[in-house]
Image 1 (spheres, rainbow, N blue to C red):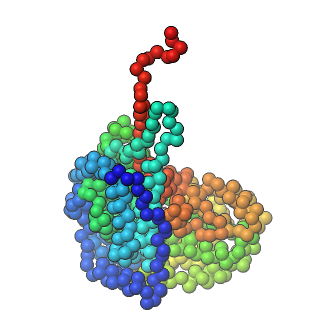
Image 2: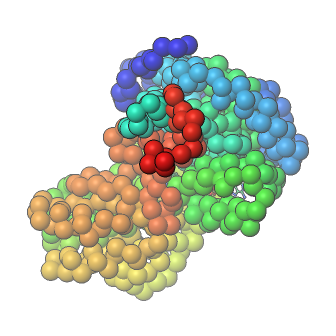
Image 3: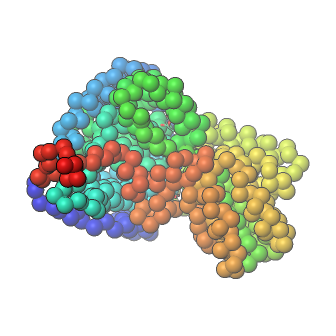
Length: 542
Ligand SMILES: NC(=O)c1ccc[n+]([C@@H]2O[C@H](COP(=O)([O-])OP(=O)(O)OC[C@H]3O[C@@H](n4cnc5c(N)ncnc54)[C@H](O)[C@@H]3O)[C@@H](O)[C@H]2O)c1
Ligand SMILES: N[C@@H](CCC=O)C(=O)O
């Protein structure tokens, strides 16, 4: 189509409340019932066909009831990876030649399907498969993914319309925002259905074809996302999904000459392994692969002596314990002025003791289980260590119970030594380390915590004194890619707080923003001269 069009302007999808008696609460219960009743065969999706991978079987279970199998996947093999890469290559010419409006319409339709008939199916999968409470599933699997799809179309359009601002007389300059030459390898984490849906679709929107390797523990929601995209009209071969641990897929994909980019979210060690492998293979690629990775965090709350204790307490509880602390943005260390601490310690402990933990399908629970036995063992070990250390005191929590589900109770550990591993290591669970400092030491403590952990993802300052806020904002400029003032450090919203961090937390290519989409394009500058010269001599040459 030749028209210059304007896609619908994006707005953030509102969170439904799930209050008793609401239609969304009933609809979610129906979808949960369906998914619980029937084990799903979680197949690969290659060239528009669903097929079982060739490797070993992996059960996908409910973390809060680990005997309950939701579905089974078969690990993807080297042969599956080769087939997916071929499918991506075959689909690429037609996909990149397709009008942007047609590509955008597929994602806008996917967003509307998710806002409507698919909403509770994907929410239910996220509740059961990742042990999110309905409210946490709603902000992730529904609202954030809908926002990613709608805002990405808006930002992509802006990128495409970015054209040279100058033309010499008789010349027309243009920019062709080409996709990358080759396939993008999207590798996604367990904890956000929205991130899993965004990482393969963002490069696809820009005209790339993709190999998508979801996390095995998120495979139920990932498979449904793929089904939704198929219903929205995604052509075969554009996104090829390969379930499993990714080891054999990476052997093939990371050594392939057509690897054009990696779109990763997950832990820092996995990202470093991928980057290292690309470095080792660098001479074998057709182009230099774009590497985008959002990784771990040791996210902080700093409470100034002027902070309101009620605000600090609420930010700590929500920031550290929603979704069992398994958000990369979760507060896992807090530095609290003694005068504030003295006014909030007891209420913090009693409120945390009141937190309900259990099956997330039961609306009375605030927390579910951690994702798997590996995470459970890691948190248990950190808690056991805290119990043994003289300089650490567990103020509340410290209990784990793995019999039925992988439950780790919300735990606060007070530590006098702010260099202890409690303040530097990402556990990715419901464990919050607190360092209480003398009010007069505010600046010294902030300077000390600024680089104590290798990460720089999220953090917040809580204070009423404006000078303290301004000072902390300056002093902590590079300590967080998402910085909050008088709020918890979690819950970034697409279009409002573009998300990502620096240092060991990633390449800070802000998911759901134009800077991210730019990484999936390789601009070509075109100069057209209307009446070209026909004589090589300059005018002054006689
Ligand atoms: N910064 C962010 O935006 C952000 C968002 C969400 C999660 N995270 C981080 O993610 C981590 C938790 O997620 P996780 O446990 O799923 O991370 P992880 O690193 O264990 O796994 C991430 C993905 O990588 C895959 N993987 C691992 N090795 C691979 C290989 N050799 N080849 C191909 N794939 C491979 C996994 O199967 C999974 O799909 C935390 O560190 C958290 O902070 C960061
Ligand atoms: N965007 C989410 C974090 C995603 C990482 O797990 C937040 O801001 O809480």
